[in-house]
Amino acid sequence: MGTLYGVSVGAGDYELLTLKAVGIIKKCRVIAAPRKSNERSVALSIAEKAVDLSQKEIVFLDFSMNALHDVSCVERIFPYLENEDVAMLCLGDVSIYSTFSYVAEAAAKHGFNIEICAGVTSFCAAAAAALRGWRSKSL
Image (cartoon, rainbow, N blue to C red; front, top):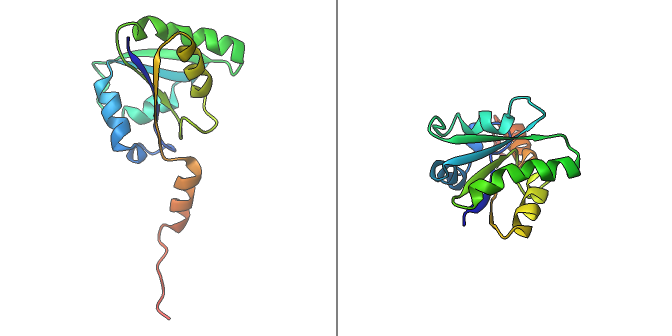
């Protein structure tokens, strides 16, 4: 039985992916990429700038932002989890305002292992960006 990894891909800049996130994405053959109803996956577009995904199987999860529909959409990755690890990419951090919370809950109810890979949140990235160029002045 595989593990479902919730992989935080940061706040929009692929350079904000953690080393742990890059390692998990490299190790997993199957990548679950959330998107909103057939639109492009922003999380996937960030990850593919940091990791070669050409040999990966990408499973798109079309989220409608309706919890009942979204849980059934997640069941598409269960057959993969029977035999291997799956990395689900999420913007920002998977533990803050993320679809991963109910994906993980549904997967755990089916007995799959869950691991969370923390990421750089948008508010931390924004704080760092606000300080860019700042220089301390001598008194």
